[in-house]
Image 1 (cartoon, one colour):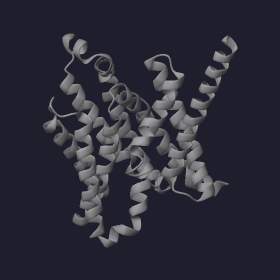
Image 2 (image 1 turned 90 degrees about the vertical axis):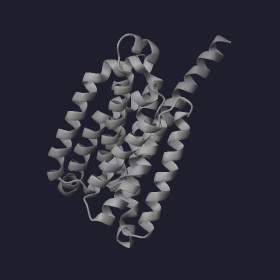
Image 3 (image 1 turned 45 degrees about the horizontal axis):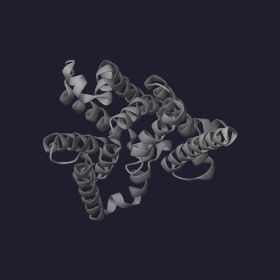
Image 4 (image 1 turned 45 degrees about the vertical axis):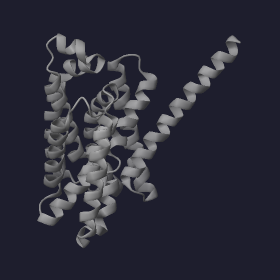
Length: 272
């Protein structure tokens, strides 16, 4: 039992720290209808890993630089004539193909490709946690200071701008926070599943909450449940940690949705 705790406890603490960032960012993504942005950012991390491997740099540095570059590209490409989802689809496909192409020519990275794609939270060590905690705390401070403005923009951008909110600046802050989350979450759930870690708890919370504050709280609790159960399941069943966590969150969403549908059908039949 102690050996399991020594293996799982650092990973669980790291997952818990990530959840503090996952819950509010995931809710903002749904409110702002930018869910596809997380997938675009996640697919870009594969190219960052490949470039870092080619230049023999730390992987987090390659992913961080790529994430920052993607934010800059989307900032430059922002045009009222071009739909956001189309731009994101363009960037997502381009970055994913470029990353896979580079990895094909880097044999040293191929054995670890699955861990980049689906994560390996169990590789987290105690020495990694202080830095992660400091970075996440700093991100939460930035998010807290801009939270009111982010909510206003999510509700009605035009009214927010008329009340003095700098929409462009807030958009940049939001994208940079998502870029930071991408770097932190690479080891937790891998490049392909980061969007799910953000979206699924927020989506489940939307079924249960009646206010923005409730939605963030529910998203936090559901994400924490998914990380805890998924982490223990991955260790017990010997499967990829990221896959286990995301599947646990998806099953939770399915259970909540099915329960609410059943209740609504029962109420409708009772009225009839």
